[in-house]
Amino acid sequence: MILSEEDVEKAILAGKIAGKALKYGQTLITPDARIVEVLDRIEEYIIQNGGEIAFPAQIARNDVAAHSCPLADDPQTFLPTDIIKLDVGVHVDGFIGDNARTVIFRENPEYDALKTLKTASEDALQNAISVIRPGVTLGEIGLMIQETIMRYDLSPIKNLSGHGLGKYAVHQHPTIPNFDTCDKTVLQENQHIAIEPFATTGHGLIYESTNATLFSVTQIKPVRSQFAREVLKDIQTFNALPFTTRWLTKKHSLAKVRLALAELRQAGIIHDYPPLVESKHGLVSQTEHTLVVREKPIISTLVDD
Image (cartoon, rainbow, N blue to C red):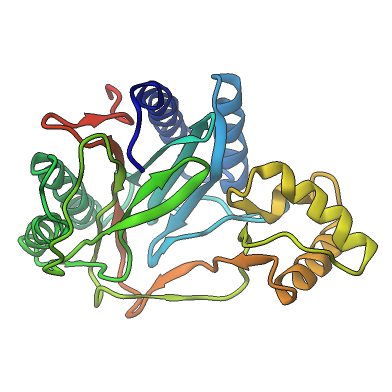
């Protein structure tokens, strides 16, 4: 999406809130903290600070790269040995700030190795940002990310990518690759994009797992059962943005929600996004910022640490 000057102001505000929410979320990530409680507190923080949730806050661990959202009653806690990806999105009037970072614990006996993995995605992001300007090609960005990660003897995840951001749309064209695709498509002035390198100790590909708890609406049409209609009515309040099961179970029983989601999926009304797992179960790191493309790009999600 190409932003107007008025749009840029809203995009910058959304990015600022998203950056602060990500930083706040990191302070909550400690060994033995319950994962779902951390995510709930991050989402509360977004609302309290004047933003709206662009997609469910997500925490992916170890060989899981993304799309991991726990159920409300999930008892899982962080382990000292985890490598943790926290991904947070905020919107202001539909304009989105999307950012992510990787967290590791000093208690981890593999801290030094994991720090290298974390640094690889961080450096790849910074190096990619250094070439962002109107006229740079997508292939050039991908090459910069690939070369940076490979210098650490690690692999970029090739079938995950950065992306354009639209109004009430988390993923839009262009797809911003994490490897050299030789794509000659160029970025334009005031284009709104997210760059998110993923580095891994594995093969550099992900696959879709099972038991999705992350969804989005593809189209609205009539459904037959009363319980599916009731759940769909609540889903429509999310402005076609991604949502997760635990949001719906605040009002409906888990059994009702599961039946409704199954019917809505079967009818083609929603699409599910299962957890994404590295194909060789390699460990994964992720770092992400949102930018407005200019000669000196605006990194809307950048906050002081």
